[in-house]
Image 1 (cartoon, rainbow, N blue to C red):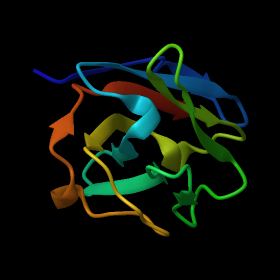
Image 2: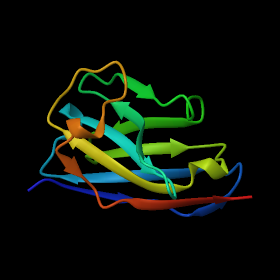
Image 3: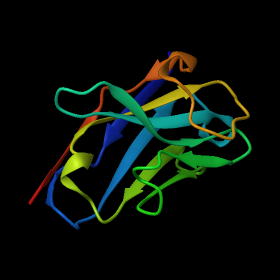
Image 4: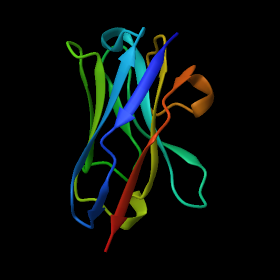
Length: 125
């Protein structure tokens, strides 16, 4: 079955950077539709960044200009480069995938069939 495995979460200080990875198996990242979600302490899950089948990306307003979503097709891996981190970026980060999509904006979590187990990001001041 499809497996998604996130890594790269860590504890960093405000202003720091992290790169999250989501390695996929039995799922073709190059043709897929994938999104990063996060869930902060006491908060609901929210979409952070999406990349659709055509490579179109979208971001939550709270991360625009700071986060970048990308794919490495050769490694079959999705990435989230996070810079200028803020305390409000703290949370569990999950990658999610569905077969294909053409989207110009973030999709709700109900769209996605496959989820990773999450990786924890803690940003402290």
